Length: 108
Picture (cartoon, rainbow, N blue to C red):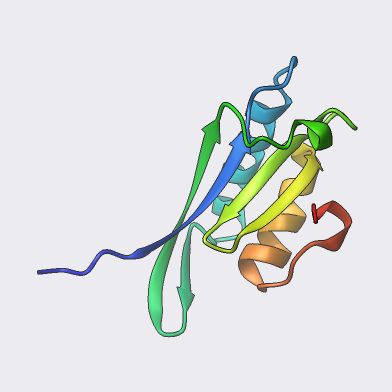
């Protein structure tokens, strides 16, 4: 029996009044493909990255502070706020690619 590959999930809130969450999710998908990180190799084993939209991450106070969306990265337990489509490239490269949390968007 094959073992299931690990999956990193990028959850993007789409509960804003405008469509910024949908635009952020689309930007993540484009960047993952562009940067070749849709499939990751960590610790000698393969892993997939999936971008999923969701209705609410219960981080509304952070979403309403600016024109961006809330983003949760699982299983890393990292939450980003006020994420705009242009931020997806940095999060993909620094967090998903290099394993470094992007402090300027981090929610603590």
